[in-house]
Length: 148
Image 1 (spheres, rainbow, N blue to C red):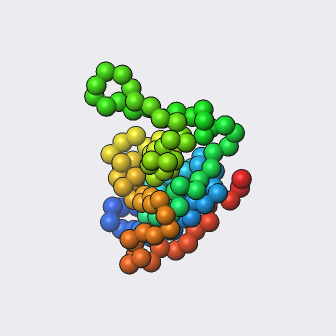
Image 2: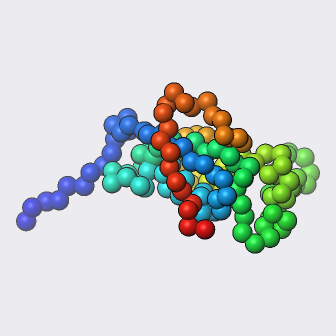
Image 3: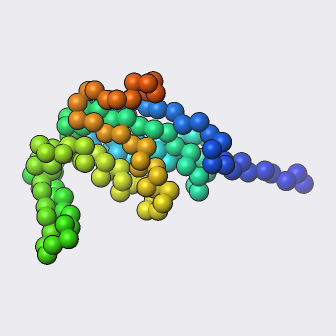
């Protein structure tokens, strides 16, 4: 009997790539689930659950994402400010004021709830328009969320 060896990635052993995603006319949930997989590194054969094997993702045109159904009017985002009561806003109000948070929050809730998950979320860069300050990293264009 020959013993099988399982590959386990070590921190600092892998190189992280940069990907550029255009969010124009993409459904939020479908886009967020695919971004979360890239941030975790599940798209690689060297995926290791306890090591950050994922890549960096730059998302542009965050204000042009779409929700299915009537979520622009019915979906509510709530947060606690420290004072009594919760603040809340509809998805349409959030698109007007902070469209980056729509994608960031959707991806955050799909990542592990741990120190490693917070480290993975730091590799997500979301921008409102088409411009971003990461040209020096040469991000490769990636088509995600195509299955509408």
